[in-house]
Image 1 (cartoon, rainbow, N blue to C red):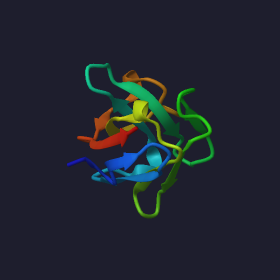
Image 2: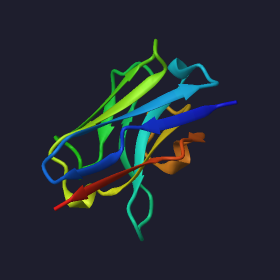
Image 3: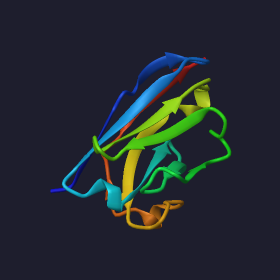
Image 4: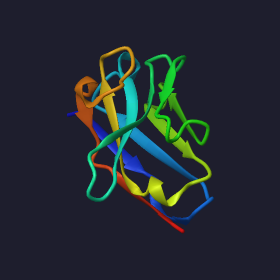
Length: 123
């Protein structure tokens, strides 16, 4: 059974940092691109960042570029999202995702989803 389990969410003030983790089980993680998506209250789910199976290639949405860093450790079957300089508009449920495309850019490229972790940024 494939499982993606997020952790690390919480309530922080604007300007603070958080580190999200995604633990993957039930699949050979090195065969999958991984990504983070988020869904803010009342809004559609949106792409945040993606990383290729090797970790060599990364893509970020314009809204987080320069503030967030995605990384992965295939030996530990984990992915992380380091979030710095958080803003109130970053408030959302963050979900990790896995897909067999070279790199995930849209939800169409996702085969497996985690349930998400809530990040709340107060002003």
